[in-house]
Amino acid sequence: MELEKETKKMTLGHEVGAGAACLKCKDKCEGFELHFWRKICRNCKCGLEDHDVQMESAENKKVGRLFEDTKYTRLVNKLNTEGIPQYRETLSALSVASGLATSTNVPAAVPTATGVPAGVRTATAVPARVPTSIGASGVPTSIGASGVPTSIGASGVPTATGVPTATGVPTATGVPTATGVPTATGAPKPTGVPAATSVFTPVAVPAKKDVVKAIAFEWAPPVANLQLAVRYIELLPPEKRPITGTQGAEYRKHQMARQLPEHDQDPSCCHDLSPKEVQLMQQYVRKYKDEALGVGDLKLPEEMSSHAAQAGGKGGLEAGTHAGAAAGPGHVDKGTATLGKIGTPAARGAPDGSPKGQTYSCHRCQQLMKEGEPAVFAERAGYDKLWHPACFVCCTCTELLVDMIYFWKKGKLYCGRHYGDSEKPRCGGCDELIFSNEYTQAEGQNWHLKHFCCFDCDCVLAGETYVMEKDKPVCKPCYMKSHAVHCKSCQKPIDPEAQRVSFGDDHWHAEPHCFLCSGCSKCLIGQRFMALKGKLFCSVECKKKILG
Image 1 (cartoon, rainbow, N blue to C red):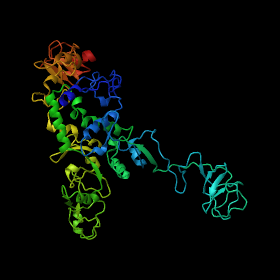
Image 2: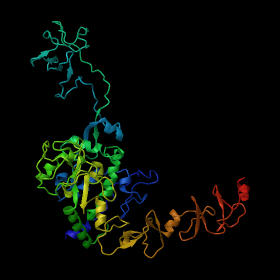
Image 3: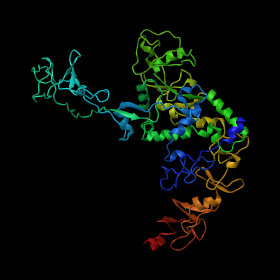
Image 4: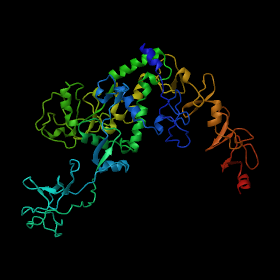
């Protein structure tokens, strides 16, 4: 019954993104219209991620299903309304230094906090309808219930504004008093003069160079130490930082669709699977959830030995020796995190319990990990392996693992797509993994028998002539109509099976009536010729005759 239920509910969600404009093709696309099994737009052949579609909800549900029934349930919310697991949004905004914002071209719409010079006080949140201001003396004042401004005196007792204050209370330099005469700092205020009868006017101050900005992120590592998360993002290539409204946000969107295809995990997103294929796919999904799927975590290299000890030494620490080991006990190598093997007693001068001279290096680039800098840890890989944030990539496509979601297999990191490719053949037509025993191979790709079709008109190509156009098979009629090059002489399309002559971007039928001299009409097949301005010439004389 379960298999029948899975088979019956299969759908490709044709209503999602319908009519959305293509961001690549612009006006050439009439709007997104999903092909019924290719996972692309019928009109422009681009993917859904290339169209102006808000995909956050679909992405959250997709990753939610991926993590369902795994140890990563902390990243999943159960939706009571739909019963669909959803990816928990980890973080939406962080306060960061202006350097991060500058390098990533944050949109002007992102709110920012204005920096102020040291010593200038900033307003704090207070209950509604109780405004506060800074009095002339630098003491905060508030409006009391009676409407009379009050200030907090030295004893903590509020005093009504307008009542003479105690002699000796200093006032801010250059701030006018009620009489309009400024008083020097530290000078006693004359008795009987109101403390602050005028409303304090904020003074505009120049912004500092290191302005703190609140930046919205599409995603950030779900760690308690927010500064560690910010530093992780700073260490990514600028064009790949997931900051809302930037190139990095678009990069994440594309990688989410590319690396984690929904049809690799959910049979209902596949086209026309048999009950047996649904069962095999469910077994495949269960296998990678149990054996390969993981989510990277951020760690400080200098803390890894304690984490490994708490975990019982799983994976072991195979720390490499650093050249600084010869410096002797107590030597500290600045800029690198020194770590020893689990259970090894600390050398003298090693307060963290790690002998000096043993360090972590990045598992990919082999460069030393710097102390205090975030490193990516993959639990399935063991405690002896760490990666720089920019080095945590798929071993096949070398792209950043989106949201640090990885698949571990035989000592290598994979994205979801390429892990699937290492386990099953993938159809070049529908982009789905093939779970049937029968399929065909052509042009270096694998195909469902029913999906080896013309990329333009979907006609079956078994036993038919076809042409590969951008790695996609196209039938001969569609090739002649949409893809064939045209003869420079007769302007007709050139048959893919016909002989032709090409020179630069120009093409001719290899026929006497097409490939001939523009001056004397001599056939140039097998002869020397010159091509100028789209014309052929057998000699300089013919060139001068036509072109002068």
